[in-house]
Length: 376
Image (tube, rainbow, N blue to C red):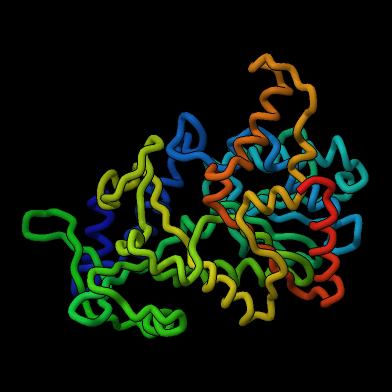
């Protein structure tokens, strides 16, 4: 990996690269990038867990909400999952529809988009029983969706970011180079990208001494690629991040860029390059701003825990379930509990629903439909 990084630096006059370029290599290099390698990344044998790792309940709840939207003529019959991972979410979603909503399932067009060849292989193996699935390596490959939903779970937190730090009364960009001892080190340079300054001004990041911040410039490009594929429908984003006020908390002074290796958090992201996941908390206010620029409106935003409760996850609890911890009933109830437990995994995530090309009265129907669940 050092050779690849040095080759990238040698193409630059100053022999240094941004954190965005570093992360793009560490995560997405075709041969050495973390996400391109043929090894388990999600679950007990991987480096991190997702909500889909907790049984099938998560995918089933999202599927039930999608089917409700379809049956109430709020969205079309196409569901696009961007960044499908190992395919567990898609399998839970499709299996639920096949069993409980056969009419929707018979007409459903499920699209999986994932850059990882290894993930695509896992997805195709897991979804072999579902013939209504199409696989793409990128958004540019797929055709425009007339009506439907574009869904992503922990997509934006894995995107490369620029990094800035407030030193000597002003913001500097943090870049990477190799020193005379052939060690990868950071350097501070003057910011020369107007988009970074525009981001800092737009969200009024005035800076504190030593404050570090991630700038998600790639987010706009990825989101615009997503929304350009949709004519009418919803964009549902699940991720972990902060609003503007939360970024000012003292314990977030050093930003949020972290690594994860074998379920252990690594604060030194220059270690184990290509061998661990790199992630940041996303700027929710920026994502909403990008959407509004394209006339994409927010209709719902909450913690994942509250969203799952609003979506009716308590209907998945089985009353009078067996107390045998190895029974399927017990496992399902335990999965529900882990997804809604205060302070658990779902409190760390947020869920955003945005609409494109949907009339105002239908937006109201969306919120009313969510609030009609029997259990909250």
